[in-house]
Image (cartoon, rainbow, N blue to C red; front, side, top):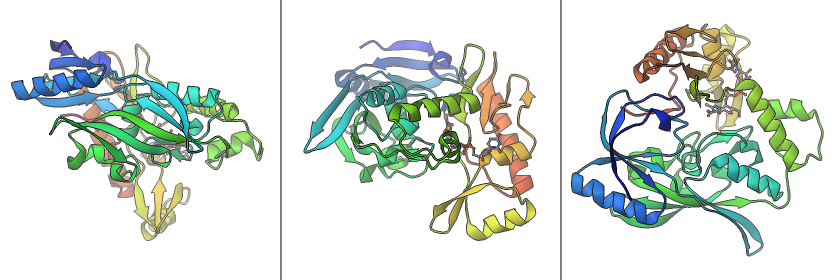
Amino acid sequence: MKFQKNVNLAKYTSFHVGGSAQYFGMVRNREDLREAFKFARRKNLKVLVLGGGSNTLLPDKKLARLVLKIAIRGLKFYRTAGRTFVYAGSGKNWDLVVAEAVKKNLGGIENLSLIPGTVGGAIYQNIGAYGAEMKNVLESVEVFDLETGKIKILSNKACQFAYRNSIFQSKAGRNLVILGAVLRLNRYIEPNLKYPDLASYFDGKKNVAIEEIRRAVIEIRKSKLIYPTKNIGTAGSFFKNPIVIKPRYSELKNKFPDIKASAIGSGHLKLSAGQLIEKAGWKGSRLANVGVSDKHALVLVSYRNAKAKEIVSLAKKIQASVKNKFGIKLKPEVRIIT
Ligand code: EPU
């Protein structure tokens, strides 16, 4: 495996911003990772793992780290003890996994269609959309521990999944590099059409084929979200949807009668960060080389020549005005590297 010096990282993230890496390596298999582990030890370098780069904001400065781009592929569908699974390498493009599952008429991940990034990123982030979430299908994850150099398997429970969160984002999981995962799929399709956008798309229709659900999700996503192009960068939702307790929601509802929320159990509700940002007046705005999408206020965009510090500064301004108007502190959903 080759370790390159001073590699520009901007092309490895969907914001298209970022400085260079002191060292950079492309990890294609377990052996590459073992080598990288030894290299980092020898040079006393911290490691930064990149998947698809579709949810990461890298700093403008040079990173004194070994940056590893995970390109471990592999995809295998199998049945055992009457259940159906798919094993996917962590560097595999997530949407290709969904497309293959749908082609085989296997259900469980069709609502997670067209989410950018890799399998590893999808687990790290516990991706969720249209009423489905990674944590509901994940059976186990194979990881490489950068502390010990050993490979181990984590169960679903050990991953400590929560809304857009997992052990891999915490101190306890920081050293774990995801190699691959086993997902549980379903041969008996139970369409999950409760999310408002899907409910109105299918308008009460019951017997919906799995390809139709994938097609609907793709159509809805394309109409609402923007995808990176050569000239525009984005990482999808920039902030998490804030979770508040019922009394706090009632207070807000009194002041802002049209405020949207969905009940998530145990006396909590999830507000729509997109709506709060829109109401604070940011939708479609632009500050020099960065801005807020005019289709969806939760999506920040970078234009040509944008710098990471411009995105961070815009995010801080948005946070301040949402805090000022609603008393709510928005937390980034994007992984911000400093
Ligand atoms: N809304 C506005 N103004 C906006 C955008 C949204 O008022 O500019 C309102 C909508 O009208 C809707 C509500 O906010 O009533 C929710 O909007 P939407 O259905 O688009 O979902 P979201 O909560 O903004 C979340 C995820 C998305 C995921 C969608 C669909 C987070 C942080 N984001 O967005 O995930 O695709 O639900 O399930 O949870 C991502 O993580 O990058 C991402 C795109």
